[in-house]
Length: 599
Image (cartoon, rainbow, N blue to C red; front, side, top):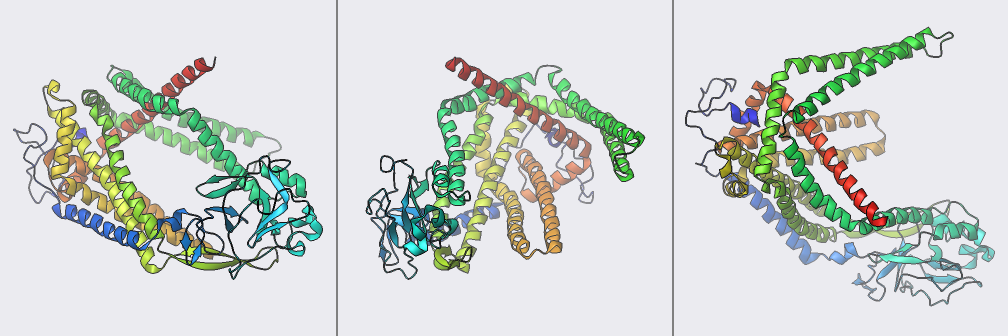
């Protein structure tokens, strides 16, 4: 940033190809006060994009039904809890899963076996199938204990019998019967469940109990449910138990510590020691690593008889030379770029002063997050309704040589898929636009602070003024830069989809080429993002359009590659150390307070 605001100018010859240094005019006293609206066309495109997105959303809302997506669908294509496709399942709002391929039946309530069976977990004598309830003579619950929807008219109904689901009424044989088919059939045991989003999930202790009752160890359906339950139960339990600490320490205390860290950076020698210490530590790591790998190669070479091949010894010796070379290169660059590094240290110190003077900058990401949440609510509404415009298809599955069973799945036509890609485009562009607008606001605020001689006149009101200037004059520039990044990201998403399809063909050459393309696009995206950020700085200072700002930023980077590289390294090091400092101190305080509460 200091490179952008330290040596600038607006006048230069048209034939200098941007390589002549820009010099500030004699009357230059900071960011221009004479601004004009920039890149208005891109602003109109952004608004038009939101308008088209709303048109897609309104059509989806008028023709779709969110319940088709949010409510569970049974194996027959009925939506539990509503009347859909001529079948009324309003009285059966929950789904009880019968197999591993998400085939289930609609039930009135999720079964709760507490106090209903001896173990409170299972009724091995009661089976839930595509056709309803089947019971062995030793069933513990009544037949109407679990009320299942009426599937008598379903063309794919499969009912249990002793022969198909419970040979000899032997629990050991039932698991591998045609009906249950090791978790891939059309029936399963009645187990204790709990409801989440109208889905009946099996109790975590059911798997161990069924292993004891059936003598089988491959109960994948129940074991996977148990593992998932353990993870989410522990996660949400811990989050709920520590909610006060997460909100209090994770936000309030962490914010206070971040200001403390910014203040510490102003103390003489603290930042200098931290940055140069990290440089010397990096050099030391490579040098020591090279020394020990060289010693190891010598040790292997001196062994009699040798335990390592000559190739392994040569490779590790080459690795030691490479490590020494990298360490030496870093030391050489550190010596050559020492002035640039000291300039970068000065920039970081000035940044810490600016943050302390304009604390509202710290809350800017919260404002951005608020805007994103508002957009996300609207976008998700459109996306859910759009997803409900698909059509139901019948899928047949056959496992372990048993007769095939059918389940219904949702698929989409080309129009819905194209609309989904467009919604994805809208999502990426809007999120990148919010980020870009924030970067312009921050750049403008810091620039105003930097060029103001009387720093007492600068405060949070400066941030408010920068927000106004950005919103009124430069939203088009933010839209332009974010659109470029969106196109690149969309290409990467599309390429990732192609990679998935190619992976199924097992064509290694095509996979390698696509992987290389993905890597190149990733690098290109990083370069464009870096250029955009510097272009926004130009816009914040001079009020120029995106293209002109990007051109000036490109040649500025080209002329000051060493300085910018040093600033990037120093700022990354400071941010990394800062994250460690804030996270570790906050965690230590929270742990201490939590410990005192429990002592």
